[in-house]
Image 1 (cartoon, rainbow, N blue to C red):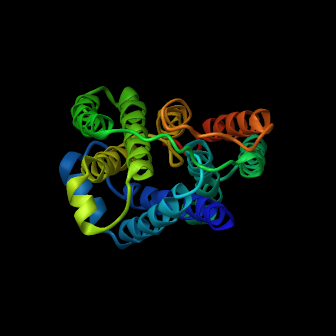
Image 2: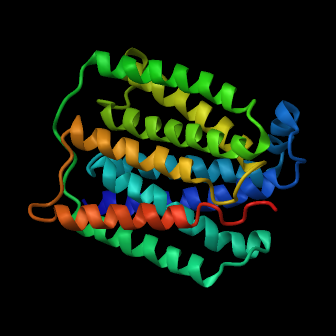
Image 3: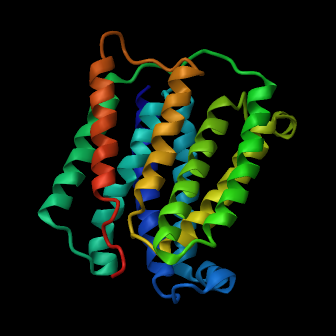
Length: 270
């Protein structure tokens, strides 16, 4: 349990630093550059460094998902927005207001409450149909993301952020139900394909959204990557808290997500 909690915290740190680095890379490309802009962003060393941090964060998230419920792990992922906000101060020359520092503190307190209340991950098993539904959901997200990219600028960041958040949420759900990491198991399991596909969709949508919206992210990103996986973990995968700690878990999750939402418009281009 201690190792998994450490993994969740490391995931928050790595993902938070990655978002700040990727935002730095995206800020150098003119808004509305389309596919050519994405390619220019992807060639920058600061963005590639962010991708490396994302990879390390994903490994840490996998370690956390081996024992912890989805609501705890995804609550930690929401906490990464606080890390991003703090890192953005020296990296992007941004400033945090008193309200935003209060939101950072709220994320930390909420994450601490989740750690205290965490039980073991649920033992409920899902079948192949559930895994294939994740693949179908990935295809649907790709189509929705394409549609969102055609929205006017004002709604584009929110729409792409929400699709990106759902994509990251699907990554967590798919990783949660993987039976193992042996090559043979991965090749036969549709959840592995859903994990890769949803990860690609999420990265593309998130990177594009960074050109139009906030440095830390959008409300849609936070809701998509936290609330949806947490609900599926509790309702379908049997995730539970420590006995008698469910009020602490609910309070911690709500506080962490609400504080992350308060940071959701931090650094938005004027």
